[in-house]
Length: 97
Image (tube, rainbow, N blue to C red; front, side, top):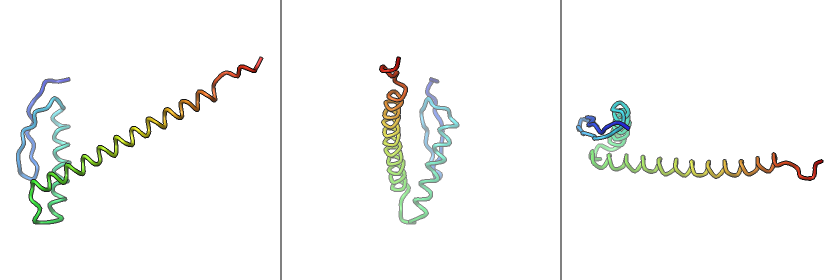
């Protein structure tokens, strides 16, 4: 893990200083994605403020995150079921000589 550093990003012209231990280029890519989302939300309604668009974008991202967590959990459960099934298939037959 690298030491925390400050990465400067801009979202629709507003500058933010992000203190992070992540790769600066990764942080800039996240900022670009967020900027695209906020811009898209604002372009859909000219009366939407930057702050409201930012909150809506956060809700979209949180929803996406929760959905992915659920999918990961379900895949983990499926893997467990498949492993149990595989154990039954490869279990040595005790009746065989």
